[in-house]
Length: 88
Image 1 (cartoon, rainbow, N blue to C red):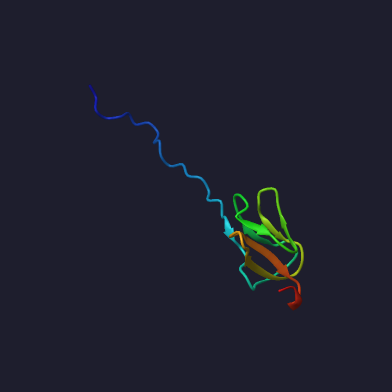
Image 2 (cartoon, rainbow, N blue to C red):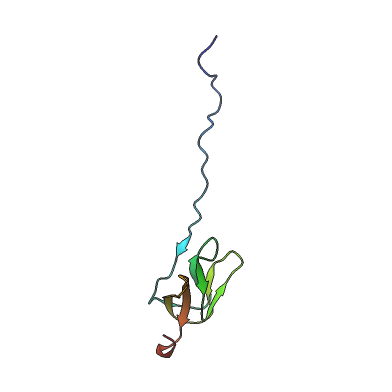
């Protein structure tokens, strides 16, 4: 009885691409309309003022301005875009 496998193809060697999730623009950074702020699975970060939630839970900027992350009472993090100093 042989104890060596035949010289077939290996069963390893496959790997999937990583999903590149996470925060793309941090608090205080300038942002333009349509830029991606956060790529996420599920709504870990909630959209605030001037931010849109896409179908795959990506947060997108709807205005030019500065990114603002804010914690709410229920431990949610809201992402907003401040267009000028009055919106902070």
